[in-house]
Length: 327
Ligand code: TXA
Ligand code: MG
Image (cartoon, rainbow, N blue to C red; front, side, top):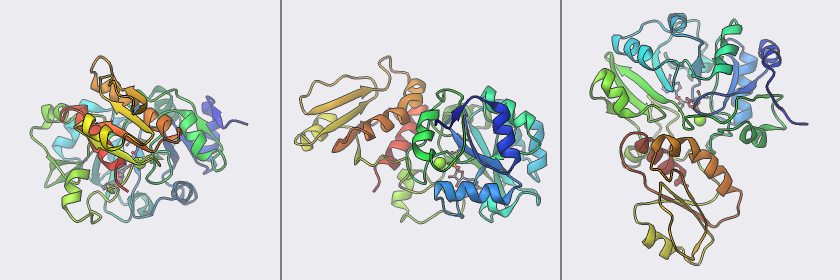
């Protein structure tokens, strides 16, 4: 029997009983549990096979609940929350003592956001506790953007996926931490860098996949989840800014090609998908993971992805594709 259901009251029942439920957000589906339940939080880590040092994001229904979770809100954090919540920005701030160490990997900061999805906002409003929710995928594999993706991963290990349709943004939230009250991007995501800079001015980016490869691949204490290989299909994946040369190199192989806009004429390609024929970066982001899920099921030898323009959501897409190429 399918674990996918639209029944919010059933989700409330399970979550209240310290069980875990996959929930929709505008970015990706999350695997949710009561932040104050040790049983639920442990179940999240175990189900995902995620190491305990990698902390979880706390989801709240509205900005006025932020001060229940964090000790102190820097001015620029307040501005960002007001500008983008509900929406795909996560703020990492000094935690209140009430937030369990299990949520934060023992750190004194906590990641928080208000997701922009009507069903999950309704769920959060009805529950007397916030929800911790990492993306609902096994550790380091492709994040889920439909209820069916989650079901494929976890049908034997969780009781319910709350169905909220396909995620509209399609890549994870942008994560912003603070050093001396100044914002720093820990993870690029569904809110474009330029939109953030329009609110708080020029902003530093730390721990992008590209920077990390120059940085000896150590785990960063600031953004412990920013591992090099992440969001990765099982099929070998290659990111290129020169499609003809890369196609030529793999021409004896079964090739799946992901492009931004273009259709390529080349007999070596077994299947190709353009993420947005009209050149829309937001449309491309919303489709990216679903296309990776699809191609990963096709027993291809290699997935070749075209490098996106390095601005707006193109930057975030390139970040995910870069991580997907690591072994
Ligand atoms: O869009 C999203 O953010 C989705 C949806 C479900 O909300 N969630 C998500 O969660 O992507 P997850 O767990 O897959 O990624 C959360 C990232 C991890 O890389 C983690 O290391 C980082 O947030 N993080 C959490 N707490 C942190 C903290 N206190 N300091 C630094 N990084 C933190
Ligand atoms: Mg994740």
